[in-house]
Image: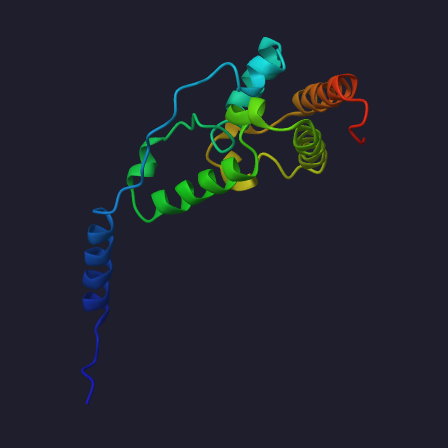
Length: 162
């Protein structure tokens, strides 16, 4: 016969699990910035574009994420690290110089679509990082920058499809 589990016991078990979770930390090491491969350097982005990218994109899409205090709390830290890993795997601005022209063109096209459709930066990110939310002027600036970057790729390789 099973003993009746009280609310107090459930709370103690949950707190115990949360304490045990704290033993499993995420890796917060970052790679040094390599200006030879970084998107901002390679594309010679102006300071305004660079600032927007660093504020709204680089935490999840580069090798230089900034880990706020709450990434010390598991399991929240695991969820955030998963998002960072997933984001930088999909598009890593720090590795831009290593991408082939066709991949660069495709990624720029995706950047355009994500910003135009309001999918990036993600709402789950901008809820906590209000300064990362793009206003209309910032969206227009980035869209124009990504379009001109695609045009520059076309000059480098006229066979790149647009």
